[in-house]
Length: 54
Image (tube, rainbow, N blue to C red; front, side, top):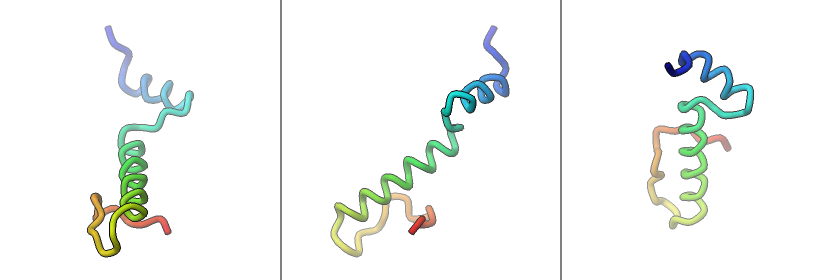
């Protein structure tokens, strides 16, 4: 039988694994940052609803 979800999440936090929501947000922030560097000025961001961390 699998471990309860809360127990699994607690173990993941203990070893530094972010919960899925935090990991997804970080990945979207990284994608937006890369897009700003690589795309021509004025190009829409892939995740426009994500606030900028500048």
